[in-house]
Length: 269
Length: 296
Ligand SMILES: Nc1ncnc2c1ncn2[C@@H]1O[C@H](COP(=O)(O)OP(=O)(O)OP(=O)(O)O)[C@@H](O)[C@H]1O
Ligand SMILES: [Mg+2]
Image 1 (tube, rainbow over the protein chains, first blue to last red):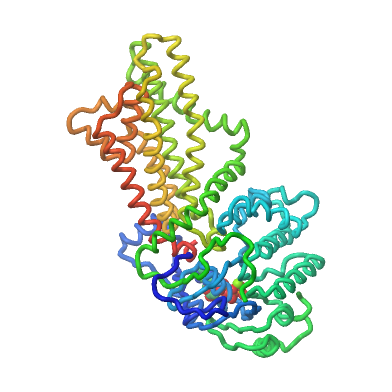
Image 2 (image 1 turned 60 degrees about the horizontal axis):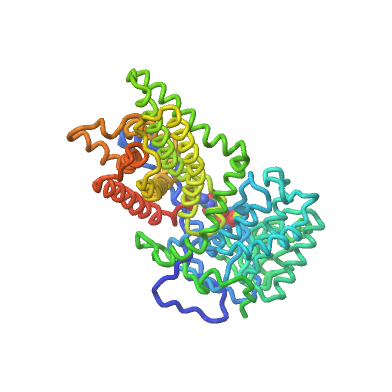
């Protein structure tokens, strides 16, 4: 959540995000569903709840300067989405802290908070209001967003549950990039959409990069990372293994995956 | 160089996310963020109705019809069991059940919809940061909007009833109706507070909501709706004050049925439960809401 702390915060002017020794742990309830019934049953048998702690991010320290485009690569379960959520202020750190300077817009892996029963337009409005925009501000943007998404004949006013996954992705991407954020977090955002939309979103991304916005991209499409980012990190089991120029990081990552720089990895964007 | 900020500056420029040691986050920024996003809650309530087609004409009729039919059933049961004698008493009983049930439904809708609001808001919670109390608040607004049209229905029943039974005890227009906004506010606050409590519980125990349906049924029978508060004597009167909705439902029958202003103890009782529900539920909710994203 976005609550300023009282402790003095040192944040160099040129940084958009500063991550200091960040750790995030999930506590997972291993057995059975979390119900009152089960809790009572367990208590009556004197059993304890078995939990497992997953350390999704471990002691990560990172600075993201304003206007830079950072790519994050890593295997499934490396903690990329977790890191993005904590930068967005959704997951509280278990240890360490995150300082963010600027307005954040997110497009995270599980899809935006779209309510499937409502139309795309209604969802755009709700999302804007939840992020703190006024009714007028978001209404002024809605047209722009739906134009960018360019859904076929009037689908923008149909319930989201009738959308194809590509249509869903289009709207989600349009929302994220048209909110004029200072910091844009994209988690697997460019994967949906057909060739023409990919082209369009890629161009939009280049524009945003030129406008000196700060962007953090998580993607398994390594070509995207290579082309758009000016630096990259490689995450592995919660830790940052390497940091540097995107092509170097991608190379290292690919070597690790033991696949080599196969063309297919560069084509799937 | 920071990028241009075209929108109003709606989040404080520098934000710090830290582990939370304190039970509560700093409350002033919390309520600032909450207030800034109040339109989100009202729009969400409107859209939720839209998704359930409750904004259509028939949807509105259904909202009123449902408690109305239920009130009829209870009225028949009560008169059969009690073997009601005079016709005047019949209208009083009906009026009492109607307004009691409408008021109770308002609270019940706040609580049951609010209790699900967090678990149902899964993706919104996983992908956006905002004060989570907005979700149950939105359910409370929605419940209020569903409660509003039942008032004219009640008045209509009374006006027609008085036409046929002019000697009835049910009062016409009196100054005591000025208590109605107070009563509605107290019911809304109590309902919102309890919604916060059960919404939090529902995150930890997913069957809370099921339990809640049984609890509200029993609660309905324990509340002065199918019976009048004046039927209790001596220490039995405690039953009113031990019930979070007891005092405010007594105030309801005082104002709507007996045509008098509620007693001071009733007013204080209503205030106590509203304040207690908000403070207790609010503390429970806000101190835990930062964990919701991890547990959804
Ligand atoms: N809600 C959750 N509850 C418990 N554990 C979780 C939760 N979300 C993620 N994890 C765990 O945290 C670790 C990191 O997950 P995360 O989603 O951040 O990975 P990722 O790098 O985004 O992976 P992918 O490439 O598949 O998207 C994993 O081990 C996962 O099991
Ligand atoms: Mg992920």
